Length: 155
Image 1 (cartoon, rainbow, N blue to C red):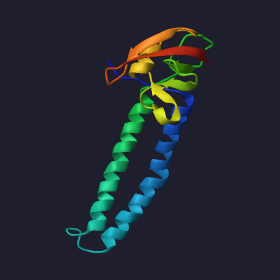
Image 2 (spheres, rainbow, N blue to C red):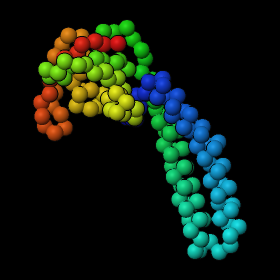
Image 3 (cartoon, rainbow, N blue to C red):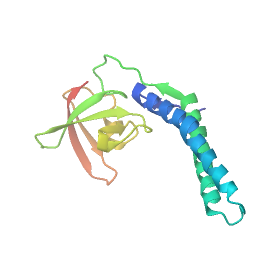
Image 4 (cartoon, rainbow, N blue to C red):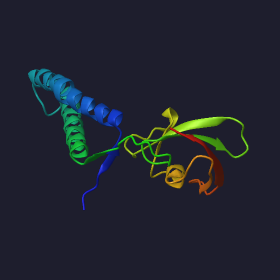
């Protein structure tokens, strides 16, 4: 069974752009750095050459990783469903706090809590999946603390 990577359209586009940049910009710049380092002579004690080779390995590994992700991507489709699922933005109230916060449920590759994107595999994301507006959900945070949230809205 192959793993699939769940991505939004924006996340898929970001990965495609990163791959294109690695192939067309970073790879070419690295080849120039390698040429310059080779021109310096003795490669056995050439720090510039070693650094360029390390960078080349990093670039090629990331290209392979991105190609694999893009090959096994499952695009998250936007639906009119009023149930929390991947791709939905939810407005949540935590405990008795008056202010609500918005989070978008995404696959783990796109998760970035500082940008309001939480993984469907996170404790909160997992707890929210399948619930509806107005429901209260209790989940156990990674620290072991039980936290109650109310789903104010689903977009």
